[in-house]
Every structure is written in structure tokens, then in C-alpha cells.
Length: 104
Image (cartoon, rainbow, N blue to C red; front, side):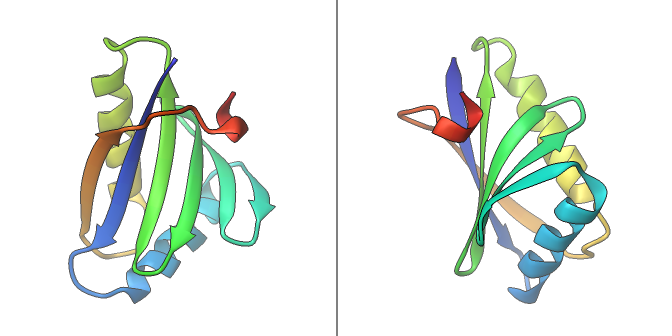
């Protein structure tokens, strides 16, 4: 299993992040872990771990293989941008050193 982390930042207003988190809860099946952390089922991606932070949202996903990563990452970005939060997002990807327990 290969884990990737996306850091989402708003291109303009930080308030759009809270709207994005609300839209994720409204439009996708999810399970709240703690106040700022939830597992969300995103179509064509699977389960992702969403962690809300100060001025950013972190999204962790897991792929079975290196070959599957580009498609999963593209599908996740496409889904996030299609939500009605109304702001442009800056997305930065990096490989994670470990798979989050919530996604095992």
C-alpha cells in the first residue's frame, strides 16, 4: 500500500476551507473520527482521511500500487473542485511515510 497526502489551501479566502469541509460532509458518505478528522468515501477514489487544520485541509489516500496513484489523485482533485464551495484550491501532493490507521 502506498500513501499520499494532499495539502489543500485556498487561493484566496481561508473561509472557503470550512465551506469545503461542509460540502464534503454534505455530498459524501463520511465517518467523523474526532472534531477535526473524518474518513470520507469519494467516488472513484475510495476512502480518504480528511484533517482540518489552521488555513489548510490535509487529505490522505492509499493506493494498492504506484500505477494507480495518478488516477486516484486526479479523481480526488476533480471531485474536490466540483464541490460547490466556490473557491479555487491550491493542491500540493507528497508521499506519506506511513498509511494512516483509519485507512488500513
